[in-house]
Amino acid sequence: MNDSSGYALKRPTISVIIPVQNGGENFRRCLDSLRQSSRQPDDLIVVVDGDIDGSWEVAKEFKAKVVRYDSAAGIAHARNRGAQSAQADLLFFISADVTVGCHTILDIEKAFQQDINLAALVGSYDDQPGADNFLSQYKTLFLHYLHQISSEKASAFWGTCGAIRSEVFKAVGGFDERYRQPYVEDFELGYRLKRGGYTMRLARHIQVKHLKCWRPDSLIQAEIFHQILPRTKLILSQGQSMNDFSLEGTSRLSVLLSFVALLCLLGGFANALLWIIAIATMLGLLVINQRVYRFFWHKRGALFAFRAVLWHWFYLLYGGAAFAYGTATYRWRQLSTSVD
Image (cartoon, rainbow, N blue to C red; front, side, top):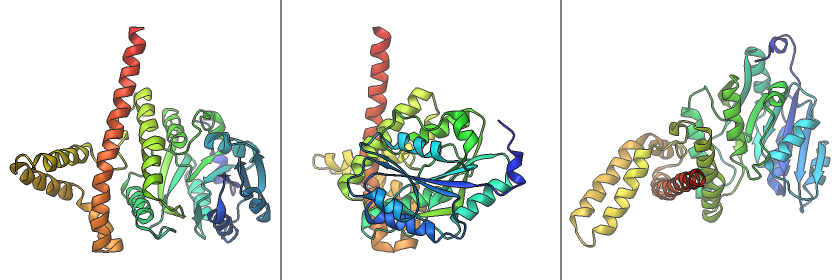
């Protein structure tokens, strides 16, 4: 890895890069939070990826450097174009539907100054999501929990709140523009950083607030088609350990138990003994995942925790099924290719 000792001797400059399509009010709140930051970015670059709601005009209001495309070319392309327009030492990527804290940028600056070997860092969601409906609270709190319990030695980059030295970003080739949808392009970049021997860290105290409102259809679609299936293919193609893919922190045992419980519940109509097995299995799920369920209870109360348990079990079913399908189709294609 290139020597970065110069960063310890001077205050690093920071470019904030935001890809946006149709950002709406959340995007305005994102830009407003940056304006109130105690440490202002040295430049703010907004890449407008085929908007129809005037997001580029909002960006201009906040004095951002705007790179605009009439038609969407994908999240990886947008982030790369933003990086090409940046002149700073550090590239700080955030999503258009988050707000930064007052000291977020300052904390990033300090982290890179204090560790001259640090190539990249990722932050965390905070525990106060912007949308107040159940699914938005559940999803973001779950991710916050996972961020807070994960190892500081990160293996995946996170474009929602991730900073990287510009020279490192260029050295590894930026984001892979074959990934047009979000959630995988940063995951894949993290793999290349890891293979290159670069140091990447999870800084739990560097947090952003997620404003996105999740609904059942949008959440399930995003998790299956934009996360689980493409990440499964990526992991298998890269030959990574299956432990790197944990269905957002839940163990494969939980997935297995969720299917056993479902089958026993259905089979109980033919044999009541299976209902007893189903109850025992569900108790096992409660025990295995008690830490996260207690976290939900502590943060939002008993009723919220009860709903979270039910949705989590539902997630284990459709997430596990998607993972199995992704693995099977990848292996089948491999087999078909080898036979041909």
